[in-house]
Length: 423
Image 1 (cartoon, helix red, strand yellow):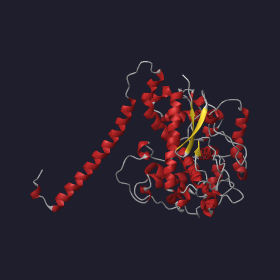
Image 2: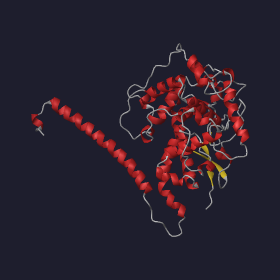
Image 3: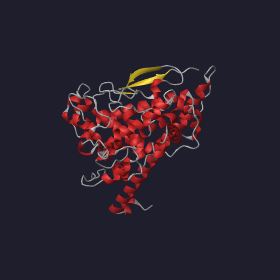
């Protein structure tokens, strides 16, 4: 290394930049090692005390299960899977996850749901899935993580919707009385509960009964997903430094149907007058059926995942969320004609006429439900009511688990159900 007094100012500046880069690289490596060490420490076998329950042997994997639960709850399913479904083993021949055959029958939907869960979990966690301890930890991680993300998004609602911050941060504010929010939700003074497909899902807030333009108001959902994965900073500038974000920890590199549907439902919840996200899936104040909305939206997205219309929206969202550099992407031109593409996409939503697509989407699954009403089944995307104004149908995991009673508590802005397990 040359002596410092023999180097020019340019050389010194170059050396300084190189040292800064090396330092940042070492910091990044240190963060990764710290995260790995946390998992290894959590999974380290502990000496069993006299009289200790043998189930505690599985507790060494709790931190890993929590990490998986947080990712699953935002990227795959908004509500925990039914505990009866978790008693079944990992299916060997499950239908493709993002193809229409996912929803061919009730059985295929359940297999796809189970296969999706197992694909997320490390193989050494698979033997624990049927145990109540796994379900308790997994569900708690899903629910607490959702509460945390909702709190974060509520504080950034001004950026997401372009409305005054007080509408969302002041708990005493009556959001249902705000004209801008009424327009976004498609509600009025006389109609307080939004329809299953509110105006915010459509471009220019113009609802299309045929669903030909559903989800084209994609920038709102893109902002929500971006904040959850990367934080607010990247919406206006490149993020530098800081702790690993959800996008890094979850290793998300492109849009997933469940994450898309999750963002749409969360957008509606943030605009609503509901202050708590109940694990039952129904809003306490506005009686919105969030569980029904999520299952319907995910079903529509998956059944049309390969259609040109959906691919265009996903491409725009991927660019907005995952492209490095500027996070602003020009909206799709309103003059662009997507009608023909959506005509083909509608074939994947329903077998009926286009002008009855909303009702058909509900009806095709209600028939499955009626044929197997006495059979316990998962909270799959097929548990849909048969009325446009959705009635109070709680997800399956709330109606009953394998053992113990469900008790509701209010924690950090959400109401959760805990299960008292026996030995």
